[in-house]
Image (cartoon, rainbow, N blue to C red; front, side, top):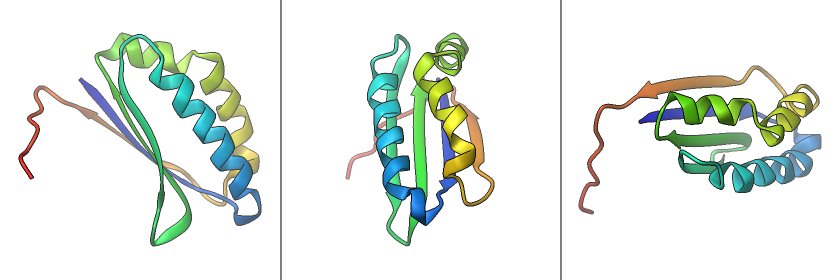
Length: 101
């Protein structure tokens, strides 16, 4: 499994537009073959920070996502939405276990 955690500092004046674009991206990404989950959140301590959590079955699924029209559309819009440099971390996961709460 492949997990991506991305953090995007958003220009406060473009926040509503960014949220709409990320919501569309998440909805379309969750429908992709090989996508396990795709979630977009805001940081309660930094409301102009968008965090994206992505899970894919494998490298091929992640690669297909990176080539999708909806990903490329957001990628093209990002420079106008950002208020700083994004941070992206990739995790290659051999196993995962759900914990009891």
